[in-house]
Image (tube, rainbow, N blue to C red; front, side):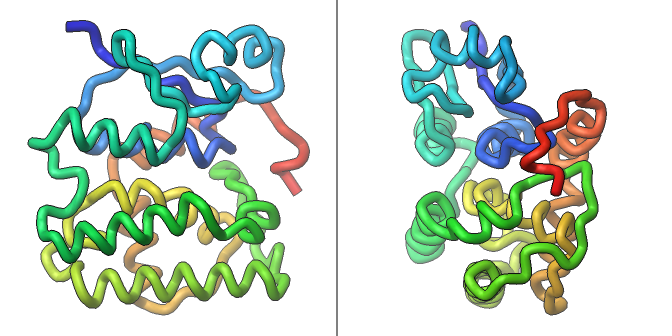
Length: 217
């Protein structure tokens, strides 16, 4: 059986690409990878072949195409039930879906003022009230999930799940911008960055040569 293909953007910048890529690598789901650097000729020429929305990520699995980060994660949970990509407990699973959807649809001020850039250290930037409100809400989510569901492991619901894949780019942003964290949140950010798949993503991002100015300041 042919392996699925995941189409992604730059590893330095593409937070949406990181989410399913990290989930698949961490879960041991084999896949092929196509990287289309954002805003390049390769991107312009190639993205329409893979993604009806013209955005990354996109997953191609035979005749099936899925072109949204959370939808890809849901598809993987359905096609690989043995991987337990959502928590098995119903209460935990309901909360994991809710916080993942909140990440997917919200936090616009954080996204715009703290773009993901895993190659840079930009401490103290983007401390505007709207972004700080997003930061406070994310920290509250993390502490609540860890307190209620995280006793059996290092992640939001104990073991690594889709919820952690959804928040991994935020953990990266918090390091890039040196966001002040309490011990619970700091430990969680450390746990995300300790994942072998996350370390591989960062190493490959640092090897990229493309620079997008709007994500560098």
